[in-house]
Amino acid sequence: MEFDVCYTLENEQQFWEELEEILSVQCRSQEHLDYVLRAYLSFILEHKCDYIKTGDDFTRCAVKLLESQLFAAQKTYVRMQMVSSVMQEDSADTLHILVAFLFCDGRQNENTFFLMGDIGIFSRLLALIEMGTDDETGLHLLMLKLIYEMSRIQQLRVEELGLISEESIVYLFVMIEELADHVEDSYHYPLVKLLLVLNEQYMMAESSSGNGNGVPLDETGRGVVINKVVHVLGLHGSTYKSFGSILILVLNRESKVDPSPSPNEIFLRLFLTSFPAELPIQLLILKLLFLLFTDAATVEYFYTNDLRVLVDVIIRNLLDLPAENISLRHTYLRVLAPLLHYTPLNQAPHYKRDELRRLIAIMGGEGSAGGHFESVDTTTKRLVARCGAVPWLAMDVSRVNQNAGLLGVEMADAMTSALSVMEITDRREKPGVHRNGTMETGAFVKPHGERTDMEFEGARSPFDFDDEA
Image 1 (spheres, rainbow, N blue to C red):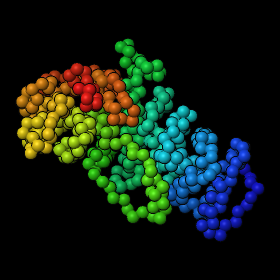
Image 2: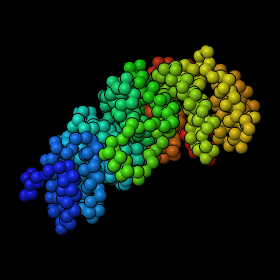
Image 3: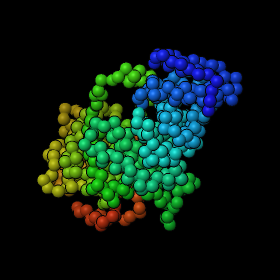
Image 4: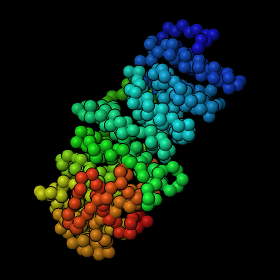
């Protein structure tokens, strides 16, 4: 579209000043507002070659709109227009401005992400990502981040999950594998986070079956939802080993030092300091690990060395987590039991057996190492007893906890977590193709393609809140 005003710029400072002037007008009507928004986009695209060189420059353009009088006066309408434009726009450069706006706005006001969900932008973003839509300045990566952000705070519709093909999941795993030799690449973390939150979405869809949300039911009334993240790893896990290694790496990494920031990065970080804290990634990782350790098709997915690192991480965190973080401590214990019982760690030589025995004794309140834990709650005792019942630890379970049941993880209600993206309730079955696994005392019978059934006393979820025990 052509506009009445032509701009002749002499330097970058003038570009930003003119952009602010465009956004400073007071709009008399929605038609006038639409015109100004088009002028804003046109002005940026017209001078892109001269002044928009990086993804941070696109984001700075979005920030200018977010800080403008125009947006302050008409927030809802501007958001609607930007979301609607993403649904229709094909130009990578224009999409970058739109996606940057929605990402920055949503991180300050999550209602924007809910609006995106209401309009159904998920499938559009997924299609753009799969097509490899990019502008060589980071659009593809930004779309990965945006689809993660909108998916982490709300449950996707069943029909949207249905649009995720097995090929879509494979595409994400392939990208991770192609970057396996560049672990610090900026793509790794967004890709891993997206797969984790998709796993969470499958779990929520299955757990909410029977609530009139369109999830198909089997003859028992359970939701039939194929968790394609777990399904792909069950079929092709040996091809996508890097994902598992990165999960353990992320869980193990206590902090990451970023390289020296550029001036634009400093500007953006100052702007983004008010972002809300995101859902702890380690919880999402632990929940996926639980699924993988209790499915016969994926129980041997991880490299043995990675499993050993995971044992070290769990031991360290169980002892070092602050007392108020008891829910996360319980989650680690819930993952530790199947990790020790069913993965290759159950084969000799047994890794860190003495250290694990001491940990279980301390966590169970038996000789509490200088009062590391002043008191041991009932849930912790029960979870510790499950770990203590792992055959190769050969511990006296009744001594660890007189009242605790034996180790077991029942897949019924197996993944509920109020610490998740949303509250997940009543997990019924492994979120993949319905399978019937077989467990025998002291032995793991693993028919190919079947899941591991484990049993919790009272059909409790391994991720229930602590006070629900």
